[in-house]
Image 1 (cartoon, rainbow, N blue to C red):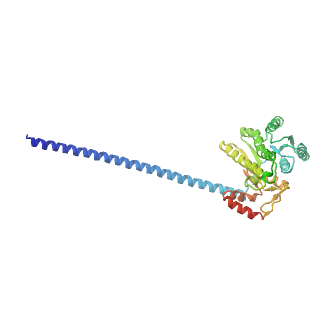
Image 2: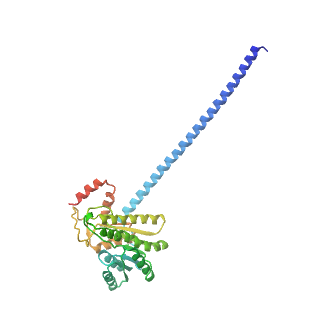
Length: 340
């Protein structure tokens, strides 16, 4: 074979090899493209399922929300049955006068046995005497609920002598109506210690037994001023906002632990025993000033229905809840309008 033929033969061989290499490259590229396309399809499927899951979850959420709203509306038309308090051991703080005394008397009339706590020994004894005269049973104890050690000592005495209450009404409170800078440090401390810390100390002493037995009810008297802030009651508002936060957080903690212990926050507008505040409202029929006996009856009715929030008067509830979604300037506009 000549040199020219050898060269031509080699060239053909190289051309064949180049063609084979190109085919392999094309095949590899084709496979890579196929794999890439398959991967993209899998990612699209994953995203599609995630979207379906989100939409499905949103639909389920809305169905549940509508169901709960309907239950609330039905509850307004057909109230839940009131549970019996006969034979229940119930603690009421601030039982010596006004709302606390009315709560104690009416609870006793429903067959409950009362544990009465108050800082004023004489007034507390008077409440007990009225209950005795009406054929009820009551055990008065003198206690300053703002003092944690005093609360612990009195609670220990109650457990030894009577037992653990199944219901605790944190009613004791104090009030000051004047500009913030007019409050002394001792007045501010007293407001917070009684209105907020007192609720925490008393609840802490008896909640453990409720949790252990998986039954019980904690009731805290807050205020409409635990929902909205107003002038001349700054420390009071701070303490009552704290009570609202306490009850909400405690209710969520017990719900997360699946405990059958109810927590109720009561938000009165104004009870007639508060003498230094005379609101001048445009719609007095909406902002009723309740007598202690009437307020106590409504509170007890709500507690017997296991309501988690009780507004006094009840018609304030939608206004208070709606007000929280409004911008502050708009809330101020409505508040200025309501106050004639």
